[in-house]
Length: 318
Ligand code: SF4
Image (cartoon, rainbow, N blue to C red; front, top):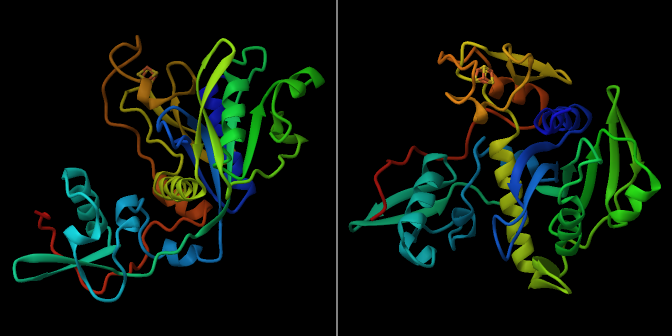
């Protein structure tokens, strides 16, 4: 099975079998952000999940969560966040827009307050690396060693469609769990061993003969990144809209809707659809309701009441 279709089937299966938040293609590095992308991430809800779901269906910008702003007295925004560039301004604007922060004005200044107390709402985070065919492992061993050494997530799992031999198991870190997905079943070949996600981690960098660069990552940095992963997973999910092409369709995997192509008769990544495809015929995408389906099948809430006490204006922070 092609990697993309395999990945969506892993997402749909996890969503069906667990009560968590599933997402895909999220950054999993700290020292060199972007150097490691996790295929699939599963976030288990913690005791404060309902409070988080009540705020917004979107990702709350990390800068807004990390800002020195509480629910009590409003704070002048420039004193709440270090720096004040365009990036900060946009993050705060977004947080007001989605109802996590509210804004008041006094004497020509903008003051911010959180609309509700934010607490980490998640517990276990599992990263799943997909390798449908172990005969073409690519960079698999290094990717798994990276995740285990950093310990950003609580568990790392390899998902494959291949028959798994002892030799395969010997080549990957012992703590990595292994699932085999075949004939509509998920067979647990090996359970994952929990990693030390609250301690120091070592992030693997560039590898040269006889030498691999490593960056020590402190627990606080890991905690920060874990929150960012959980927030991104909550807002993003894993669903994709069907392709904007006359051959674009909605298929089904594990009871979930997935983008489908009637020209190639298979699940397709809409990101790869375009004029370079021989079958491409621009058209409106077929109707799909990814948010409604996600709301129905997961604890994510598409239209929560929100925690804003009143609608704040959308003027820019300057
Ligand atoms: S662009 Fe190509 S792959 Fe995408 S839906 Fe159209 S025919 Fe299929």
